[in-house]
Image (cartoon, rainbow over the protein chains, first blue to last red):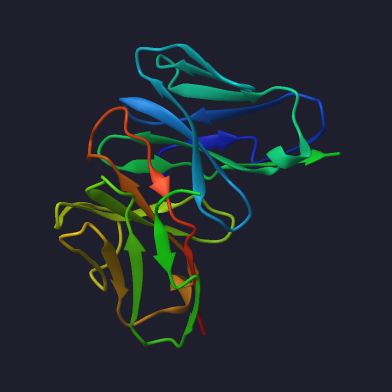
Length: 108
Length: 115
């Protein structure tokens, strides 16, 4: 079974717009991580937020974490066509448990 | 590009056959995890190896087995292949298991097709 659930499952936006993806999880976490996967390839780590953090930034990425609601969001600002990929949240308690992902399509 | 390499990149096998997939971990990483990713799904945890011992397993039958070698590279073996085993198999290496701030470095995966 998967721990996280991303929402929406698919998102289509125009270049320059912001993209927001949400993740809900079931059990307590040490940290929550976001990964990106280009079509059929390996996953790339984007950002990690610890359970005692509420918000974190990295370049055009902004991640929030609400442990009371067991949810996280990933915001990509000023999106580019190259951001087109699937995005997964995952938590790690000895092993990474992934959600089903959000498929983001950014149209030029 | 991460330092994790997987081989082969693509593989076609017949139902009932056995397959071995290989993974070389990132330098300095002693922990390797394997994941199965079906089309349109997120990666599912198969098992994890730390210093040559299995130290975590997901909900996969015993015909999925693994090894980790002294150089921390790893193999995933699948016996009696079934059609549903067709998937992208991903290997990830970590600096240490269970460490709170450890990110995973993934290989590019092996695409297995069972016919």
